[in-house]
Image 1: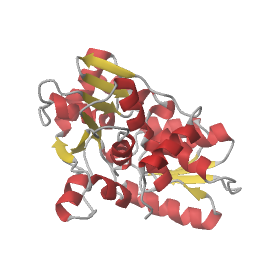
Image 2: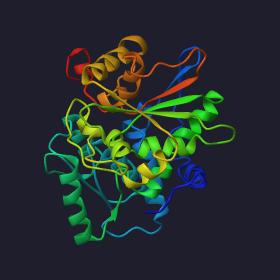
Image 3: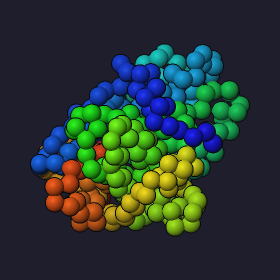
Length: 311
C-alpha cells in the first residue's frame, strides 16, 4: 500500500476544485460546528475521492470506471463518471437502500445488485474489472480516494478557523483517515474521534488486534458503513495518531438522525447521523470551551422515514 500524505490531500484539492462543492459549516452552538457533507454532489463526501481517483488516472479505458459500494460511493462514482462523460458500472449488495439503487440508475450507471454484504459485491466488481479493463475506484482503500476525502478536513480547518476535535463516522475508514490528514494544516492537529455503530466496529477491532480484522456487519447504518474490515491505508493513518474510537448504539443513531431533522432541518441518512449520535448520547463529551466539528456525511435516504424508528 502507498502511504498517503498531507501533500497528497493538497494536490487533490487542486485537482477536484470545480468538480465538488465546498460544503457549508453550520455553527449550531458556540464552538460546535456541523460540516454539511450531506449537501455534497451525489449526497455524500464520497464524490471527493471518486473525482480524485478518476482524474488522477489520465486517459481512461473504453470500459470506463467500475466500483463496488454500499450505495454512496457508487452514487459518487456514477456522478463523477457522468460529469466526465465516461461509462460507470456499479455493484451494490442486496442490503443497499432502494433510494440509492434508484439514484444510481437515474445517473445512468449500469447497476448490479449482488451478494448480501459489501464484500461480496466487491468480489463481483473485481472480477468484472479484470474482464473489462475498467478503472477500479475503491470505496475507501485507495490512495487517491483517501486523499480526495481528506479535502473535507482541509475545509473544516479553513471554514472554522480551527477546531480542537473532529468527530467523524467510520466504515472502511477513508473519510476518517483522509480528514485526519487534511486537518493537519499548520499548528497542532485536532484530535479525531472516530464513531462506529456497535454492529460494525471495524476500527475498534482493528485497534484492539493491531491490524485490520473482519467484523460482522449489521444494524441501521449497514448500507453505508458496512465494510467488513477497516482499510489498510486507513489503519496506517489512524493507528498512528492516537485516534479515539467510540461505539454508538443503533437507537442513538436513530435519535441523532431525528434530531438533525427536527432541530436543523437536515435530512441525514443513518450513517450521516452516526458522528452526531456520539455527542447526543454522551459517548463523547466535549470539555468546556472545546471547539468541535462533526461531519454529517450523507443524505441518501427516504425523508419519509425520518419519523419512523428504523430510518
